[in-house]
Image (cartoon, rainbow, N blue to C red):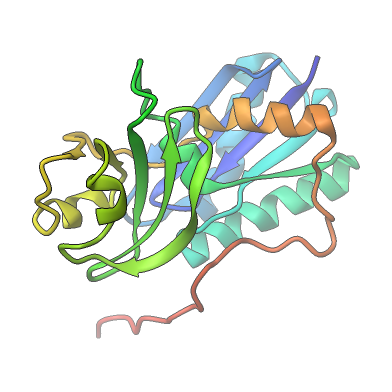
Length: 227
């Protein structure tokens, strides 16, 4: 039995869950365009523990969504998890953010189709990867500028399901008949982290607490506040 705490802060969705044997027993999240993660994250952790009827000492490990995504959001999530792991002497598990997003879409009997999770990275750029129906990653994570030929190598062979807040900017550019865009905007959630983290816990796939850093993919670019 493994009781795990999961934290996802890579986008505007601040999300916390607790799982037991990979089954989610508590989920607290809020999507806030103002990125209120710093104010809410610790409160969400307390609420999730209360909902699950657990104490921090009951946790076996803590997992964090490692990126790519918002620089500030990732820093908040990772620094929080590292602090908890250090205080409780618990292992840290890192989960790929794009896989977390991809797992929100389930393909039934479509082994030849693809899932492309997309996180908005400003202007016409997105963070993306390509997965099959079993959530095996087929193409490395990239920061790329979308044009009419994006993902053509996959679209020419099978249906491609685009998911995430970066999908909207692709819809008007990618017009291939095999391109399928989700009407609802999906964001990475701690709900989908449970299965991935449980497998990593089972095989002891832990991070070095002292040296682990988020997967930013791009350098931080500051934006000046409007006067």
